[in-house]
Amino acid sequence: MKRVYFTLALMSLFGGLNAFADVKQDGVVYDKMPDGRCFVVNFDEATMPEDGIVTIAATVKIDGVDYPVSGILGSGDYPDYSNGKTGEDYRGAFANCTKIKVLRFADNSGVTFIGDHAFKNCSNLKTIENIPSTLNDIERWCFESTALESVDLSNTNVTIMKDGVFFNNTSLTSIKLPNKLENFWNYAFKNCTSLNNIEMPSTVKGIYISVFEGCTSLSNVTFNNSYTTLGDHVFKNCPLAAVTFPNSLNSISEYAFEGTNLKTVDLSNTQITSLPNGCFYKCEKLSDVKLPKDLTDIGNNAFISTPIASITFPSSLQKIGDYAFQKAKLENVVIPTDCSRIEQGAFSENANLTTVVVNGLECYLAVNAFANCGNLKGSLAKACG
Image (cartoon, rainbow, N blue to C red):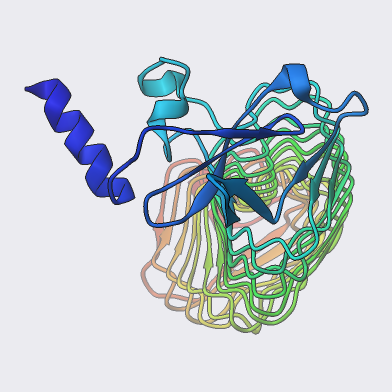
């Protein structure tokens, strides 16, 4: 019963499958669906060109009929081409193919999608040529751990850089992003250690978890005034020196800029009301910060170990979290009237701090909020020392 059910499920998914009659052409294996769609489903290394240039045909002839090639299947798209493997062992059409060096699309190609893991671990794939404008979907982990050096997606209709799509492409130095791109999903370019420059299309709205984490050559990102969201660890350990924060920005997530080379941060015109834990953690060159005008709270470790000497807190501020400014270089601090909580170690180990003014009538000061501020004078120093 289970075997029958599985077969029926596949038939429902693909509109009913005929017996497979795949066609091999220059090392590429194609097959068609009963509805007339034709896909790249596998590769035949024995018949691949010796120069490693693999061309995806615009059409292939099956049973005397020319069928347009619609896509390149991924690990979850077509289980019958999994070489008998099951579950997580399914692979994409070219996954683990070490012979391919150049992926080329034929003129007039109508390919619309490339499936998940389709080129995973193609460790000699350096170039993609003639990418069709019809392409609108590149699935998750598609080009994970390839040898791609540059990619031009600018004329495609892709709107999402999906999870891990170029993960661990350590040779990738540049990419032209789709002109209609709206979102980067998690880990899209994580550990692309040679990537040094990114220009964001004006359509980009969200950049999510660890998208550029570990991009250790990424020093320049040009943003247009459109994005609203930056995810956790999005630029962690990038040598990023400058970022323009647009007024559309309303959310920065935890440890977004941890370990970057930012020198100045101007959030004054953004829509942010809360700075999360560690958002500028150990940004050891960050000395100039302008906070959002409607900011209500600063999270734990937000500016720990930054050389900030002076900062102006907005009147809307209500809370400063644990160790938020520990080991900074602050000299004077003025706490706004509405700020009612300064948490554990918030300003501890600020060796240059001499003056703290608390304007509110009631303000909770956690134990050691100003600990080890050796130059702090007055009654506050005695209360918090």
